[in-house]
Length: 214
Image (cartoon, rainbow, N blue to C red; front, side, top):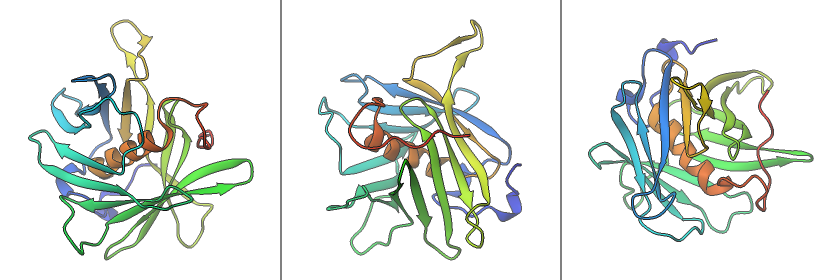
């Protein structure tokens, strides 16, 4: 079931809400060091987003900046400390003093499984959750119904990419970000950056992995 464009709520920027289902190609970069950033291409192969970390330090970072193709800051992501559930907050553009966040992400653990909960602030509050395994590049973002938590609408998926010319699955450094019509792609890529910091590429690392998507 696709999202109704009439009900889309812009989270980062309306120009990144596409009217049709869109497949973005996400690639980990190695400009200076292996896996030091991300670049994102639209279906025509045009650069859409980028994230640069400029360093070999693999330790978790406390501030992430998502940029457009020209280097303009679209989204600032800050890790909140101390935080038992690895809470992150997102801010539109370069964060200014006393600026309110536009969304927050935190891990909600249940015995036997774990998921990420996302709260969007603004004129219309919304809630999302992420289920699946980011290290395996297999997870789904769902929009949840506030009145009925069991009702979930898939709005974005992360999955492995297959080379169309050889039908060979590519490595985990290249994957697809699949968006339903109207879902903010800048917001979705911000979630990818947070997932990468929380779970990385190693499914055996300390801390829970998101439950498998159905």
